[in-house]
Length: 106
Image (tube, rainbow, N blue to C red; front, side, top):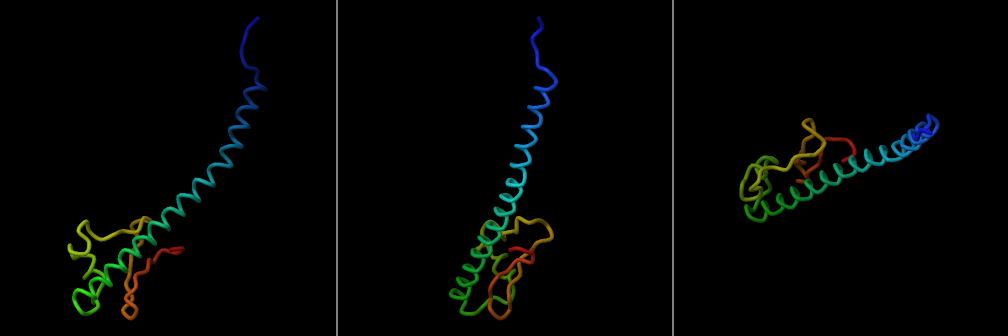
């Protein structure tokens, strides 16, 4: 008598694995997007804090965001980047001096 798996048993295992993957993959994608959004918001908060510090140190608001982000006194490791990718970037409002990200959802 030979021991082994029948076609029905193998098919059942494949179906169970497919169901588990169908449940897990959307959650992983959602979690990744949420993490990127949270990292972007944290970078915005850091830049807003450094802009305020610049204003306290210099007595005036910076003319551009690059004035602060390219200054090693405020960002010794370089300017923060948005985790959304190469086409995402930060911009500073010239009236409120607050930083925003041009990527939707941030």
